[in-house]
Amino acid sequence: MFNITILYGSSCIGKSSTMETMKDSFLKLEMDDCEYWLLPEKERENKCITFLIDAIKSNSSSSSSSKDMVVTCGYLPLPNDQIYRKI
Image (tube, rainbow, N blue to C red; front, side, top):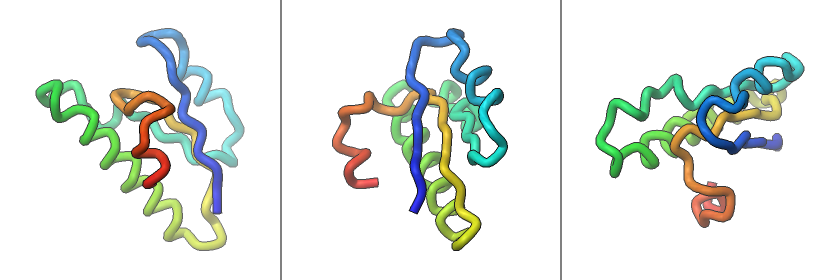
């Protein structure tokens, strides 16, 4: 089992910079890597959720070497969204 921390905030306030200064023991996931902004707005949230779930699955399959994760928010839903309970 591992922890997932999502850095939420407005665009260009330093989420990525903060994540990069964190220990290498974390698996760092930059949501911008999935290029969600290239999709129509109604599809962006799903793209980001799928990207996050795929990263979680990949991290989980590492068995004993899974790491705590730090993720930038991109177009993920707000922290109180029900999707996080399902994930």
